[in-house]
Image 1: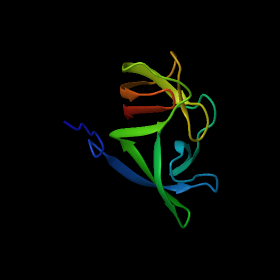
Image 2: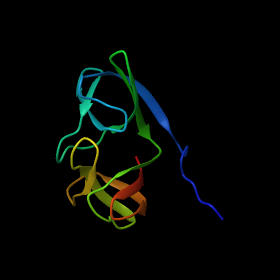
Image 3: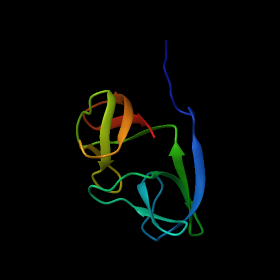
Length: 110
C-alpha cells in the first residue's frame, strides 16, 4: 500500500515577492503583502511553490516535504528555518505535525 499526503489541505496564496525568493524556498512575511526567503531561526510562513513577474505563490497549509538538517522525530515538533531551503528542529519554534522524516528530509503539515 502506498501512502501519500500531497494535496492534503493545500492552501496557496499570492504575495509580492522580493528578489531573493525562489521556488522551493521557506518564506516569511516581510512587509505588507510581501514575502522574503527565511534565514536561520525564522518562523516559517509557508513554502514558495512558484515565482513569476514579482509575485510568489506560497503554500500556507497542507503537507510539505522540505530538506532538513537532521532526522526530526514524528509527532508535534518545533520547526523553524535553518536557511531559505532547509528546516531544523527548535524546541522554541512553532509546533508542526511531523509525519515523515529522514536524515535530510522532513514532511510535515503546515
